[in-house]
Amino acid sequence: MVDRQLPDEGVASRYIGLHRNHPQDDTIVGSSEIFRSGEVQITQLGVGGDFHYQNVRGRLMTQFGLYSQTTPRNDASPARGQWNLDNAYRYVSEAYGGYHFNVLNGINFDAGIFMSYVGLFSYYQFDNWAYQPSYVSSNTPWFFNGVRIQIFTSDRLKIEPWFINGWQSYGRFNQSPGLGLQILWRPNGSISLLANHYWGKDTLGNPDRIRIHSDDSIQLKYYDSPESFFSKAAFTFTFDAGCEYGGGVSCTGGSPDSPSQYFLGFMAYNRFWFYKDMFGLTLGGGAITNPGRYLVLLPPINGATAASGTPYFTQSPGDSYKAWDASVTLDYMPSQFVTFRLEGNHRQSNVPYFAGSGGVTPPAHAASHARRTVDRLPTRDVQDLDAGGRSTDRRLAFRLPLVWHDP
View (cartoon, one colour):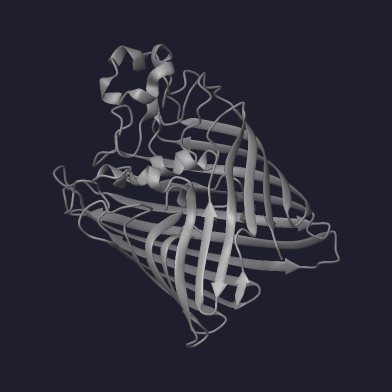
């Protein structure tokens, strides 16, 4: 018997954002959720659902809107080889099939594109306490392409090994796959512990460089009084640590010939619910340090991508990057299907990174920037820009995340 047919689920996220720096080309830099300033835009529009036939299972979710452009451009792996992997997967956020084994409390074997939940936040904003997550979440993988085995030893513990193409990548960066493991433990309805671990070779064209990463989170509901005006409260804390070694870099104790290249970061959020969970307030933020900038989202200066790079924000061994952020989020949730969200963000970095008033598209080339690569740009065209010239970034945005499903 078919338990559920597609489509039975959908997500949509619309926003209008105001940027303090007022970039002239309306481009926002350093965000994984909001990408344009002063405009009404659709971040994500997805339709799909789950499929079950006896023990066969699958899931498909499409993605249209800005996600279909911004997510693929952060993956450099399609530059290796042919067949335009970024275009092939552009409009798909999840697509996997698998089989359920009636062993222990259940074992799922899935192959395809699936969500990672590295950095705790969901790829779909409707699931989250805030719209724009801190750097630890924004700069770590949203999805993987490969194979996972979900082993439920009980209704409280899940162990999930990964055999994947790479670090949020459609293909491999070199000849080696990525390996990972997720452990999720929920001993009761008030606490959740999540640990993610990763190993891979994810520097395009450098097969000797190895990446390791650990991502650990705790989520605790410490107050629950459904009939009170102040109805619920919870907090999360996430800590990430990782590094790269080999191929010209070291994890620690670096030298001029082999600089230290690592990632350290944390984020913390506290969420309050009011009036039977109809209103919400979230306070949060975090910080990272990432010498070598290997996990920093590359600014799209004149159309630059993770594959092309840009000379105006290099990601070379030894390049410094430290940043912190803070946010305030107000939610009105009149039903389980809709959230009206107002959010303010402040972000700070130790180097020029965010778009200034000049934007990131040279005016003389704005009409055709998509047909050029940054290394063809005359230097004078970018000298006049305020692109990546600000170390401070402030935003105010109104968002409307929606979700619908067939119960």
